[in-house]
Length: 483
Image 1: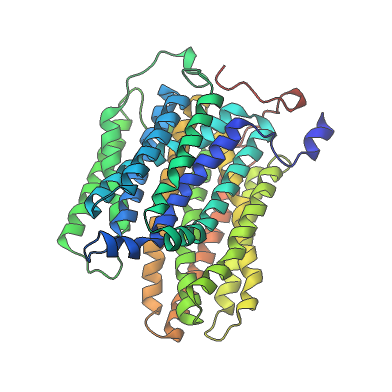
Image 2: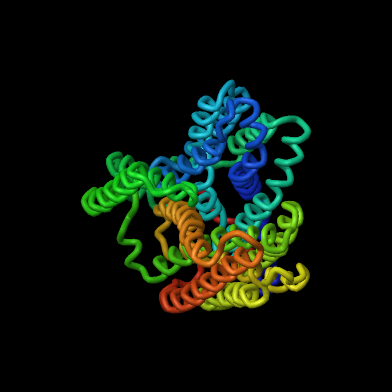
């Protein structure tokens, strides 16, 4: 038994794993694939206006709903919400394909974001219900690695579709894939009405007030973070900021009083859980925020074409895909905090090396090794964070945890882009030298944040704070899902 478990490098393939990976890949692709077709959308139905709202509406809806939908999946069950998410996503893709004007397309994208939220937050819970022990850790790692690969392929795939068939093809491609995913979900998802532990307690009323406040707070906060940094701050921006702060403060107050909160704040009393959530936030700040300004250096500092800049980013994503599985394997053999901390340390080394190396004359090949270190560190740290969050949480709260992970990831991406953008603006400007100085400052700050991530992770996710992993069932048989 032990020999067989040590030799395994992949979780046993199941219909649930295939379903979760494929449907999550569909959602991740739609985060970036549409951006490729924005010029064509503007020319066709935008009437000269910018079509960036097509991307913004999707991200705002998804960011606002993830926590709420994740908590509802704990109460209503994974199957109905996942099936509803796929159906909504697919039907709204059909509506987007048929859009006669930009307003129609924006509305369709809001609905599509709602369906995407239901798909994303159920990924980890479904895998947690299906697998146990090492198999669960590896399944979560495979899911995360596949999602990263989907994000890597999306721009290339979207470019081919848009140039060959027009912008409507980037939405139409979701139709056959969505139908196939729904049929597979009907076949493989268990019919159990609830999640582990749900049958031992009476069902509680849904926290509708808290859900509405959270959607308002996160929606306005996401909208604010997506504003252009070149636009002067206005009274409208101030009103949006005050609305977000007031809604989120009211949400926290409600969560302390209701019997079945949308977000159980007591979970953050666990140092390991708080450490894992902080790691998720910092990971997105470093990855999304740092990469935005690194690409700007490639294009404006080194004078590379968009294709060349995209190809030079490939080492980050490829290393992250490969090392994500390695990180998932390592947490079965080493203390999780040490594994996650070592990943962030390697990521910090890569960021620091880039900060020292970049100049307007640096050859592209000199950056490949630091880029690989950045991606490898992110892979080692990324998947174990999700596995730790699941391990320190009660089974009936896994959907809530998945919603928290998705929400903090979205916030981290927005905060990272905005905050590091301010750092870039202090040192950057026009011209290759100024852009390089700005990018160097961003990378140096990112390296310092990686050190913070190492210290907090090693401290909070210590061996004594994370319970021992439950071994997989004999002969690698998965635990029954929801039975």
